[in-house]
Image (cartoon, rainbow, N blue to C red):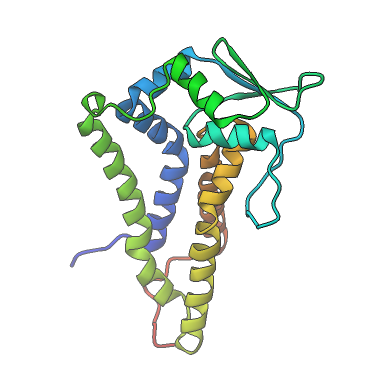
Length: 229
């Protein structure tokens, strides 16, 4: 008679391993997919001097973006890390890209400065290590399967029949719709605020670690539950 692994242990293991390896995996993607960008970051120092930056998550019609916000948003969308430093007296924002100093915000000037510094606007396909890229993507796919594979059976067994639909549907959609849905917005805001293109990974890492802790403390294996109760 075959024995199956407890779903809860598989789910929590997937969350824990993901939390411990997200940073090296995403850094590995940069290294193997766009080594020119990695080299540019290592050889080109970028600083943003300002003190009126805002932390934007949700954007509304009346949302106001300062020049600092625009500069950091531009660098973040370019996939570049930068260092935030105190504002220069008399200047709204001063950005240094290598040896080039930019005062104020002007998109064309920023683009020209990046080009002059040797910024790779897109990945060189001839430099991509496709094998290692696929290895990393498969590893992250395995994390997904470790959680989403057993979670359906686990949730069905977790609640009695009379409340199962609501008990499964409500928290599931809150988790996916809200916690998952705001991930791009919050992660981008975190990157722009910190200046580190990998800083947004702390959001899924913290959520995964919370899942592990709560799961260990409050959840129990359900594989022997009578789902008809």
